[in-house]
Length: 56
Image (cartoon, rainbow, N blue to C red; front, side, top):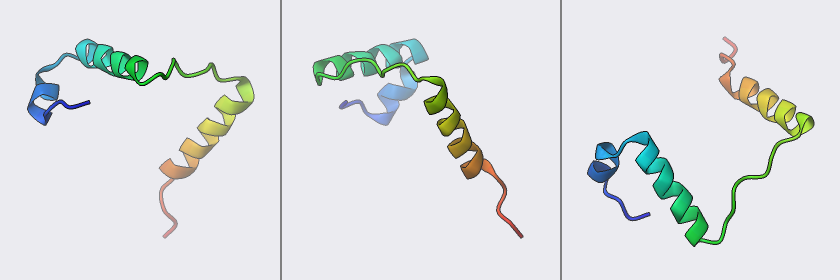
């Protein structure tokens, strides 16, 4: 997006979110599609898999 790390640090979360939304709109992308129950469950399972402690 072209911001320096310092500029990002000085932004509020709302300001940064607005920049991301504007960037996405300018790039021709829309909002992410809604997740159905199956997709949400698959993402939760994947997240759980990556957050598990490694076997010792």
